[in-house]
Image: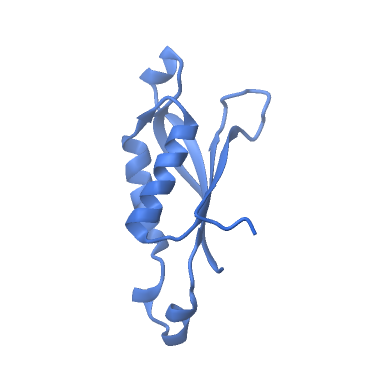
Length: 120
């Protein structure tokens, strides 16, 4: 399956379980790989048949910045469902990194989830 990707999408969100985290916005970095058959769009050079990564990016930014979850896991699960349903994406891999959550983890900590993909 072909893929459309978005890497390094940065957004500020209320995320975390500690009381102090509920009062601030923290930076999250998202990497997204979405399964998408690009052949129909490529055959006729037709933008209307392509997955609009600008629209996906904007929807993700809007959703995450308006969210307020305690767990990155919850955000990842809800965001994956939203993308798959609203953009008819059959499968995806989503990485959410929370830089600074563990100071010793220089590049961050987070979660990786896959939805709708065959593991065969």
